[in-house]
Length: 124
Image: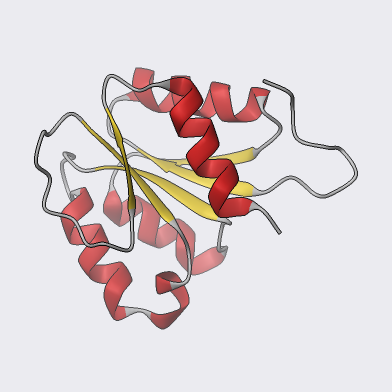
């Protein structure tokens, strides 16, 4: 895959996953593709970051301590500012109960599918 064009500012992606190895791997892939990334270990940490800065998209795990992905999505649905941010859910669950306004990428993660999903939601 080719990195994002340097002509336009890189889109910022918030990666939310409690597993540091998975979170770092996703961030490394996205950074290699030209995205700027921020990290959060759970939904509550993500909401704290979102109060300061809104990213172009969010990559979200569902199963996390403190505040899981489902609770995060509920909080997002109540906030008009956050509802506009595209969410790509990454999960190993075979039948996750998520709303229709998020995209799903299954674990183990297909890197190409994840990058394409992020690109699709961050195109100008």
